[in-house]
Image 1 (cartoon, rainbow, N blue to C red):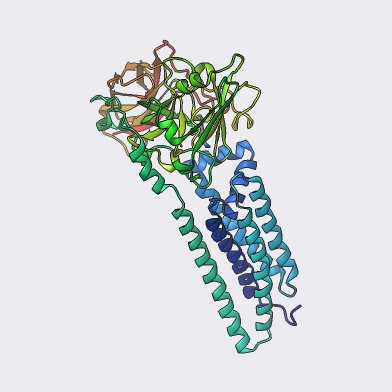
Image 2: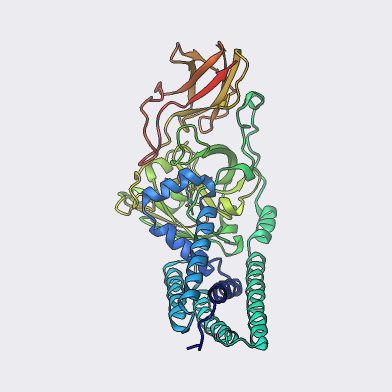
Length: 503
Ligand SMILES: Nc1nc2c(c(=O)[nH]1)N[C@H]1C(S)=C(S)[C@@H](COP(=O)(O)O)O[C@H]1N2
Ligand SMILES: [Mo]
């Protein structure tokens, strides 16, 4: 116990800096032990895992693909606040603050235990360093409160060293994590993947000049959705896939084993079930990989099996109906390349699954490491959280131009957008203004039924406010339903509409 209470400011510094030392040292140990799961990340992953479904949906709706950044910023603020509280609780005695720090430390440890990705050593380091540094800084701060200049100087120097040490440890941890990351593995993989000529995209497959996206989405612009707070770093050399369960012959494949099989390249449009009407969680790439059907036939699926249950290195799972995967012309791939380069780490390097016509959450497992042939008794990641077990992509369309914003000139207004009904194909898109008659839009050159189709039309609009709507009809003759439904449990429906002003 210190003779005089430590001033508030200094007490807060003790809490904050001890916490910084805890997180920095944990990050360093994570780097040394080769895990991406620093204590903060482990807690973040647990938060994602435990967050109730409506809150997660809310976060995706508000922050979109920035949802993880928002979570990290939010957690950092909460931790800083708790760190200040720990300091303020300990203006006389060290133990209340030290106890609070030990409690967060234990939260980190239990999160690391729950994670499949290691991080226990890092979390234990954070716990011990946090408590010890807190005790020590508290001791130095207590001596400084007696008023001697030399003691005050000592407090400044000690806290300075603590902060610099925490920073250096954190940077070193990040450096080590990057050094053991997958960038080298991706470069060498590029040379190992055999060249497979991909069908060229015909001219006139998009109306980019009229405001649609380009037909192929550049890898860096491709939408990204997953539950991973840090991108899993799985090297091709370490990759192994086990195809097992209800099969005649279990297959265990290395990356090179996979590449020795027949590879195919094709254009596929992926769509996320969380895509709102008018949303942008949809992109198209040329994927190259081994047909899933070939591997299933090689392994020999036993009767009674219903789904292929795929697991990612980070524990994420998806369940894909086997009758879909076994269709001779479905074209599902274990993809190794996206737009002619090895999969980017964010998109599942070294191997992911893609299945034309199914939403990503039931089919597009990234960082794939396990595939089990089984029955539907086993619920997959999102099925356990209330989403549909099976999820074919719904026929939908979107207006990309005009966008709501400043008034556009009245008269001939070009309206352009995309429509999709993967594995069925788009037959027609219609546009109308203000609930008037539907006008058939011009369709871009058809590439495949597994990709989006661009469209455009010219509407004659007088000055004033207008509501423009579009609807697509697929090749089974089904016209997109106007009934508005949210994304849960199996994808949004409804017509996209845009309100504009003409002058
Ligand atoms: N390992 C893993 N794979 C995953 C997911 C995930 O959370 N983890 N999300 C799925 C979902 S919901 C979608 S829509 C697609 C998105 O793929 P992309 O990020 O490459 O666009 O990946 C799927 N594969
Ligand atoms: Mo998704």
